[in-house]
Image 1: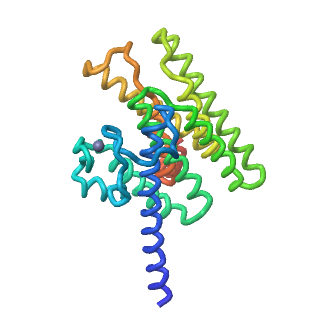
Image 2: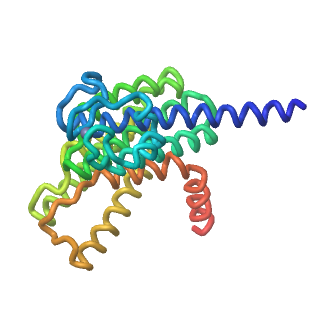
Image 3: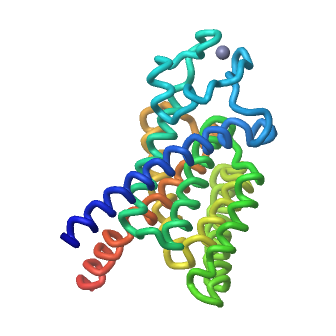
Length: 266
Ligand SMILES: [Zn+2]
């Protein structure tokens, strides 16, 4: 009987987490659209980016609104980007997984905040080739505030993590400058690496950035080899930083297992 109640409680919690995730995704869409355009994230309310007509509450329901409207604005029938429901669905799934990994804890709050910041940074960087300060500065504050989940001196661990982030990306920056004779990385990337570090601490920041550089490097080599990009073209690094961060958020125990297996081989 008790077991049944706890099962029910768990399923109810997953639903609450999913609902929260979808709403967070909806908010991220506002951030992703408005931050790089330097618009307010509060006013005006949601409106069609083509004809400016306000979006009705019932059409603004995450994912479902897009499906009910068949992907078109109710007023002017302009197609709505599939990125909106995608961001909502991905955020919903991420929050559910983070909840099952952490429960309703401060770790859950921190991991969810970082996942949201990384998704927003990746989407903005893909389109505009920038990671706005209006994302990384508040991100730093949230990370610093939540660093106290590690105890009173948690902020020290957070700052150590942030410094690891700045250090590794600065090295990458200078290597890129020497190799390609141009800026291969922006200040936004370095600031985002700092935010990742303050959120996860030095060890996991190191892992996240090594993975980001690895995935980015492999991706770059494939693009060069297939002739899709040449060496002079800029490639946003934000999506790779996000990939490294997501690996650390979602596959911590798998990464620890792999490191242990590796250490046993030595
Ligand atoms: Zn419209």
